Amino acid sequence: MALEYKVFQPKKCADEETWKVDLGAKVELFAELEKAGADRKDDLQLFLAEVVWSVVRNDLSIPHAVELISKTPVAVKEPLQRLFADALWVVGFAATEAPPRRESRDEFYQFVALLEKERVIPARLLALGLETEALPPAVCQIQTLKKKANQAKTKARYTITRYNLLREHSEGYARLVCLLERLASCSFEPAASPEQLAESERVLADDVVRLAGFGHLCPNRIIAMTLDVYETRLVERDASPL
Image (cartoon, rainbow, N blue to C red; front, side, top):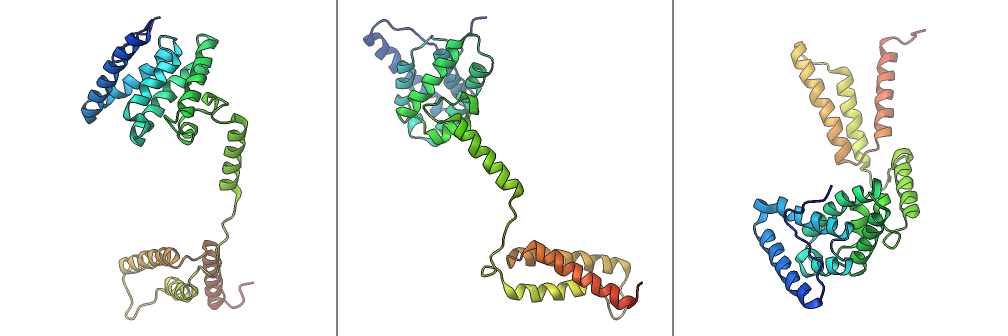
């Protein structure tokens, strides 16, 4: 089924003069869509997506498409670069995952590589915005990217955070002991009502959490001190539990 272009109308220009006229008209259309702001943001995104589709379908040559994008503010405005990266992701996913013909993938790879080479869109944004399989080797080595992604996932999942004792507030642990002792006993003179006890426990628990963040305290040490206080209370209640 033929693709029906709605905003961007590609033309195969036979000579350079015709292309320059068509290029000027398309740059003016892009400027008009950008100037409209949020009211025509969908049309702007569709314009960019249809530019990519026209390249993939060989309705517009790759050099002409790159020249068109380079004449727009996409190359100097990061929000537009992100919008263009989204359009590349949509079309690239279709072109690389289920291409109607092998040439579609090749055209997309060459287009993205030339965009990065001409510095229309940075390689970092392409690596972040596109699927791994949609990145051409000229922009980023897929195997290297997959390896680094797996390393980052492994490090985030299995690395145990080691807290720096010089960065921790040592007096925070003294305050922590006082809060844990009060939380463990919750004794009042005169005796408090159940509602007052519940509210006091909630406030003390929140204070412990705030103290951990403010004093950069190690969560493992906080749990260990909590268990120590709990064990001490058990021994005080029954010196010979066995």
